[in-house]
Image 1 (tube, rainbow, N blue to C red):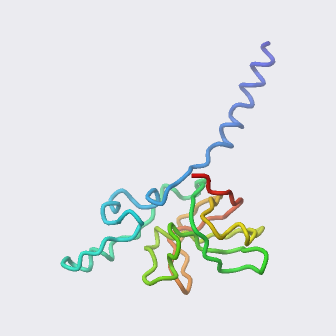
Image 2: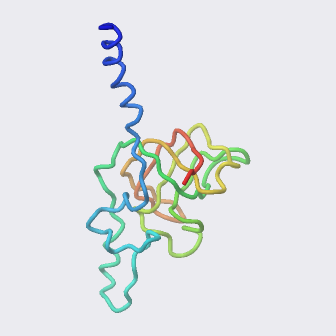
Image 3: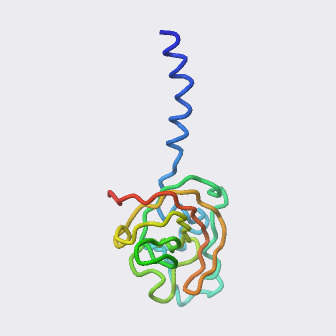
Length: 159
């Protein structure tokens, strides 16, 4: 019995580490100090009566999320790959983001590098992307992303 308890005590931390993946919502990528400046779709609220400089103050990232293992849902905008797989893409919070002008702020766009390639047929609807999140700005022709995600898996969206 003692050997069994010792074995369980030794293996329990390994199981706990496997579940250290944070499941994030898009609001979680916005610093607390900026959240009241965004609407429910993750876009900055526009007040045409106010000072324009306030609107340019949004888009900061949360540095404490750097190097976190995360799972985040979103829509895929393919950037690199071939007819069967996508190796680099933008993950955005709603369908059509970055295609319509203006794009979401940088903290609402995640640049994903998926080295092994994600199957194209799995990317038309909202999906979860799992991997290591970096607070690294990536500029692309269509948008600037505030986060980089080193993707390891794509999972079906289940909510």
